[in-house]
Length: 373
Image 1 (cartoon, rainbow, N blue to C red):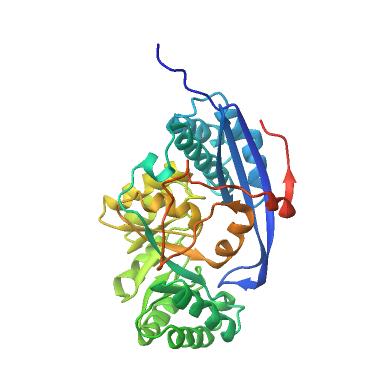
Image 2 (spheres, one colour):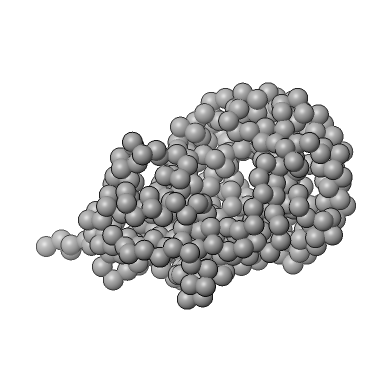
């Protein structure tokens, strides 16, 4: 007789908040902490782990709407669970907080599926490469030049990265002279051989972004991320038509339709995807396929520990964003995190699932503990 497969029996969700080590800001926001909503999904003797970096309200979405949708589902049927979660969110609102909550559960379900199969997560999905390159990302607008330079040197000299990214667009694009001074400082710090990337977080108008991009050419900037808001795909497309630097956007892709909107407009040279926002591992591969159909590559936004797992399994994936906040806090919350070696992250194949577990020390940062479903 066929072996009975376990169904999802329990979903637990916890919330953690970790202060930043220095005031941080980009072109359009500032923050002093990062909140992580962590989901654990149980089936049989195994537990899958997933998480998302978002507001604590996502925990309530998991608890009240998503957990009831997946409890009882065959733990190997990640597609069925994703469909059930999408239906549960239909009237409540799928983008934004809903998509982040669904992503955390989806990641946990994929991790659980791999553990039940006796495989590492990347082997359960199917690898196309063994490792994925990263770029160091930080250089916040609140950083003094000395702090930014030390951060960039650390990534290049200690971790061997081939590219770094800093924030520009300070104060909603009102300090362009300062932006360019910081870019010049960054180029001076990393030298001519390291790729230099910038991210305006949608701070500029189209005309302003066009002028800034021309000025950035002096410093050989190869990547201009969200020069204008990604809510304006037509504006991004106009900039892309005249830009020497690659135009990138997509960190706010919550649904496949969001990715299609950028792709159909011809808005990007590279589509960014955040596995903890775009519907998890299920959503990642759907959006990556849409980009590949147009001969475009995808780049992982933040969440490097999880991005490494899917990037090595994605034919059209390029660098992972090794974001300072996540580089710092992930080892505080999770055991088994990966370290950058020679500018790349290499997922483990000798551990079940993604190989990470919630650390006992994480309790010091917990802000919301609630019973599972």
